[in-house]
Length: 297
Image (tube, rainbow, N blue to C red):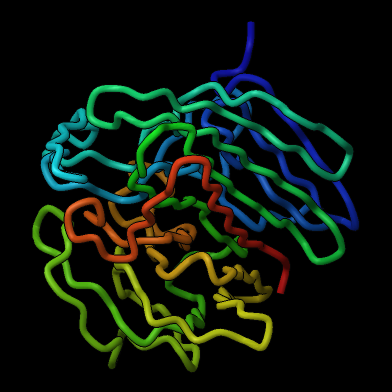
């Protein structure tokens, strides 16, 4: 009998070990010197809470699954029926296949075919590599259709240092926070002030987070760096392809609530197919690529 998440690809180097799975091309585990850096799941478990999943051709939500692009109305399946939204793209349960496998890296690919609600074909890849600098994940998308395709990307890792969220300090270089309605769809943005301002690092405490942040401050290498710290620390960096991050303390999870903090790189916010905010118009033959990484602090 096989695993629920299909083939398992484990890569190792310099004390880091990561396991990537066929199901959705996602990240199941990441450790350094045997300590978890992400809150993953076991090999016999089905993915819950979108743990480590790839979110393409959009992250987060699309209102009513409906949008119009280049004058053509589209209707996607409502994968979040409780809130009547289309959620987290079209590839997170698909079978991603290995393109190249080595001891310290693996590259998986999936060809998203044109379909009802998204009539464009995309060639997608996800490359995972571990080294002394930690894990680097590089996603790419090539438009194989004859017309421009709307595109955005995201990923859903849960960072952990092995301690409850309430006891941890979060440092996040974001100047603005997105406001949402009862369906978790955006209404406006505002300055990240007071308890929402983590730029100097502050304890999470009892604050419930399921919020998108933007206006990211970057270092000399163009990276925005998020740090989660308790008795040990873990950091996640985003390159300049990512303009947003969703931060989620897992309060609504059926298991593992407030045990880890999801820090989700996103190129665009929720409902970007309707608002156009940071939405990528991927021209025929054009390839988008973006990287992020996780390492011990």
